[in-house]
Image 1 (cartoon, one colour):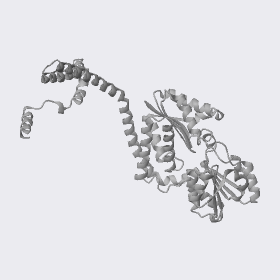
Image 2 (cartoon, rainbow, N blue to C red):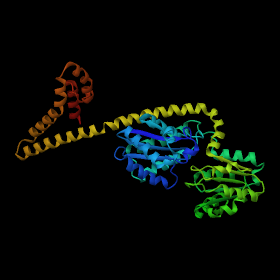
Image 3 (cartoon, rainbow, N blue to C red):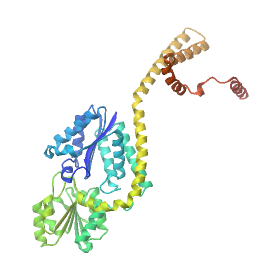
Image 4 (cartoon, rainbow, N blue to C red):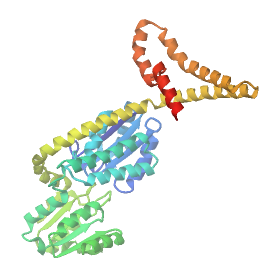
Length: 438
């Protein structure tokens, strides 16, 4: 079995492509079922990690090239409007490269915001979804579990997460460029997920005049609003009330924009040229891209925020080097585990053969006892027969050519270590004396 990761991220594909090759919300479950049907039995294990910055497919496969072709074809067919450009943005990472990549992603080294912690939760969600879909076997389970452990080790032993500038913090900093005093602003959060909660926490620290959470499910909006000391709003009410807000932060799992150009145009007319600051953290985007062309509207996407936070990377070079060293060590350990996994069928076969020999000789001994033969003689015959059968193969090989014998001798020493060698006469006398004394 081999590992393969195929995907695209913020480094290889623009936002306009990433949002079309993504699996928001419930679409992930459907995609997992489709992918498993497409790959099985070539790749019996598969998982999909889909975030605003990446869409990646992890699989364990018997035929890497066949799996790569199947996954590429599936993505291309599923997102046919993207066209042939999709394949040019995909990366394929085999075995050790796939392991290293998973560890780096979990640790936040491959994120747009270096060291950001949200990706770890997203990877855990991806592993959970794959498990629920019945697509997570021993190889991918081990890969994800070790990825989580590596992320914890990197964050606890390095400064990779220290002074990490999150998307939410960057949004607050950009908002200060538009509004002199954030305490005089009215802020709207569209959505009720983890990213919105993080953004709302950062904006709440600025003590805006009011905060409102809008969501399709009013119960979720109300629960988040209650924690923040904010009000809640049904998403259906948004078109009539958008003009009330100076700052709009949106991140939902919608596959289509929920804030269109016409809606924002009406809001800006009602606001009488008062500026509106909008942040779209969703992929696919929640706010139509054409909104950015409107006067007095300042729209930022995840890629825009990523460029804002990139400046802080230079200060953490030493931490990155330390994290990379940890990851390399853990990659080696994982590949060693993979190597041992390849020997499992042979080990099982060896145990099965040994069990068959044991069963046959034990049955022969029982028949001898039933015939009335002396127990001591039966035990001697049983031990002799077992020993002869287990030594027959190695003995026959040692009678082969000299070159073969030279290669086998060190292995024989490992198979039959010194602790099984006959004890010396002095050692036997010592054992006898110890037995007598006890």
